[in-house]
Length: 163
Image (cartoon, rainbow, N blue to C red; front, side):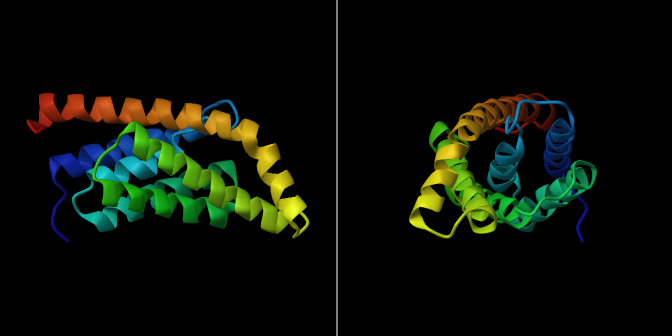
């Protein structure tokens, strides 16, 4: 394997810091998870790292937080958000919103499959009860995406001499 570039090391550090924020006390669903996946997809030039590094960070933090019955859906949503980052090649209000909605749809579909009656009413109830958590997710997604985006641009210009 080739040695990691300075840029890749900085990206890995950003992801590690974001994963650590998952471990700190926070409001429900106000976490850097979606922002971390989107950031990875956008900024890693070696796209295999766009999935490997953030999933590894999630696994490590989940060892401390605990895995749940919907963890597989969280990881699937996480992978899709990384793919959104790869395809869009940018972090923007639109890509953060699409990522947030995708994450919401996939993870709550998992909640419905595992915990609600398999009926239209069960599906509607599941998504309806998840709306307050979605509000919090949006707050976290936009906040952490902005912090990661602007911080990375600052570090890139000042220390990596890019962008």
